Length: 133
Image (cartoon, rainbow, N blue to C red; front, side, top):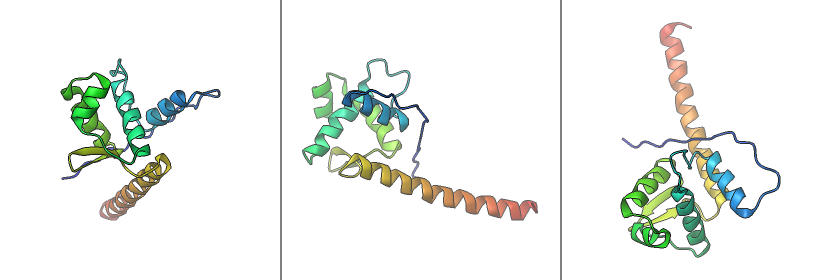
């Protein structure tokens, strides 16, 4: 069974931002960076994957570990989280961000959410019928 967890967090966007702050807000709004990630390793991985999009390439887990000075286990943990959130895909031993732009990524996630809400609504209507509501 395929499981995708889509997380949208409402976070007030700071006014004066650097590009780094903007990317941090963007990723945090998508529920990517947890409180337990004290070294911001997931954020740093996200940045490397964004850079790779600009160069139209993917990165292996070994390349990410080497670039960021992280263990491969840590990298794999965060890659799994990013895949579960629908942010990246694994293709031919490389990890890439869905879409060729961040706006395309958001559009893909929006379609995922809409599809899932349609399914949930159908289930709710069937439950209403069974419960005679």
